[in-house]
Length: 130
Image (cartoon, rainbow, N blue to C red):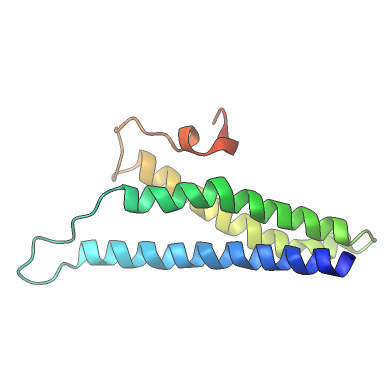
């Protein structure tokens, strides 16, 4: 039973990491197209929702699933080596989540939407009070 829980946790964590990486690739492509329009065109026109909707989805649903996977991995290993074992999975959760937050704060409060009145803390349920 513990091995199944560990396997499910790893699948959830790698799924979260994969979706975050796909989002990063999508954002890179979107911003590259904006910066390098085709000759003779007006440039790429896009709505901010193409950025905010996937970002908010990942932060509202993906991050809690990734956190639950970390908790599942920690609970599946009740031994003295839990600290060593949980470092790599925690890294795979914390780094993408912090990267999404930094990008979200930049996008909501920086040049793209700066001064618009939108706050990332209003959109992400677990950022209450930030």
